[in-house]
Image (cartoon, rainbow, N blue to C red; front, side, top):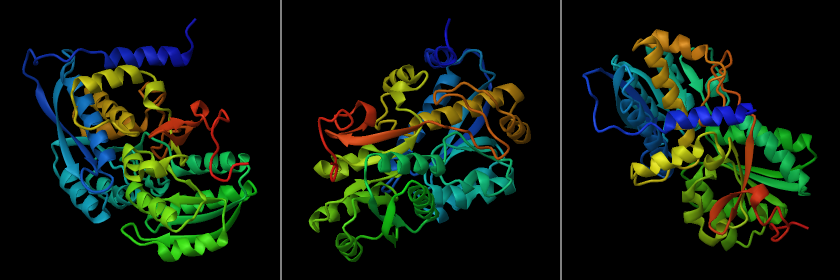
Length: 390
């Protein structure tokens, strides 16, 4: 007898395996749906992977002869900047022809835009941002999220790292809501698990020189430097650690789980640890077929770590419109009632705040130029040692 996960994988794979048709046999009403993410700037690799994944969901739906509507994807760039995010969110939400949207990788942008979606009544599903207040900070029925939050991520990280035997930490975090949130939750769970924080340093997201902070951290001699921020900042911090001879282990958040961090850090990425909600794409229900379909489209960029979440968000939007029609209020109310929905990222069930509960957090280590699941790494098997590991 098939278990639930096997059945779910089969169901998702069946949906994904729809062949892309050359065209639509009969004319259908055209419906607009939106995507917003960072398509330029330091986190653009994640945004482009998310955009392509949402685009794939639209292409597959348009190729389905049984689909009631033909969909047009409206794509906007938030540049991972709150002010720009509010600008493009307003533009998208003000277009009454846009029925719903998959939005935002960067938490600082997502939290800045929730008021906009509520004011215009545009139902959205966040596909990457992890700040808890995006869903829990307001009672906005328009706002949903398929990925988990930084709370689960940091609880897992703290337990895992103290379990490896590390005792002392220094923390560098960016001063956006994203970085401050990671600092808050990691500090809480680290203390609860017996770890000691020797110093905490807030830096701006565009800061270039960390000599003062890293020199102070070097004098504190921590076992681990915890970094709460995104890839561009993380690459700079990791590089300058090496120049100053700071030998602490580098531990990051989901914000650095990207090919860009590996490429930007080069050999210095080796042995870096990070934590992200969800499983690797190839291990997700329907993940193999998703990767095959993605490859067929010849996208110039990889789907990246959060591409499957963008795909799941857009699929849920499209299926909801198919079920209730192109009506924002009906789509919003139907999304709010979502329970037990099969998807590439597993089951989606929204709580009263529109938050999907994703219990699984994956531990990663950078090994030989790629992010490797910890359990499958040579570090976990004892063939290599992390910095400072006994």
